[in-house]
Length: 279
Image (cartoon, rainbow, N blue to C red):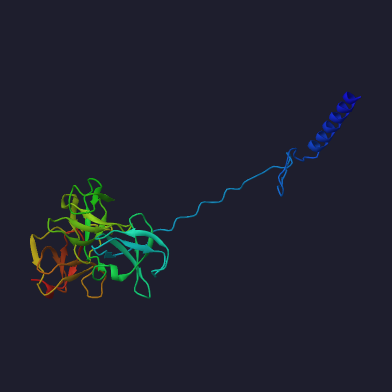
């Protein structure tokens, strides 16, 4: 009799389990408060990928700040001391200055691209602006940009062949301290530099095609009172195409009817200067 009862009880359990499976209810021991969510096998689960965010281009900057040498500086997410720290600016290192907050704090860009704020009390002197000249890298190859004016110094970036970069200063050994597009500041050897542009010259502009006018074999020297604007046409209101440096000598190509000199700059750009400004 007991055997028959056990068999009947087992059959009941099997029937209940089969019914539960048919209804999609999980079988097993559940803990208090545990919930199961069953998804019918016939319901397709799809995922629509979201488009990747478009990166924001780095803002250009022609000014820099240098951290004091007595210690590293915390870079904050906002222009105040109680703001979250997002990075560290190294003592003695120079960084691109992006903006100045209303309370005087500087927004800078670190070498890894992060941007944040530092107190002006932690910076050496005032922000430094790039000179009006640019360093032009030789077209024979890219150039390593070093942390210090030394070939054994760590590399902080690369200056592209044929490109020009703002010149910040020149070290005693002749190395050029330049500002890369991403806000990185470093040094390049004069051996990898083609030349330094003249003030007011745009070395990245496409040079104007040389005129068919042959050199006369003569030269003109700019008076030493100051640099001279070189114009597209022999008039004061014509577009400026370059600058002739005070005291320098330039090839004379021709003389216009009104007496203006047609000269060629070192970059190959040709234009006119008033004869009153040269000798």
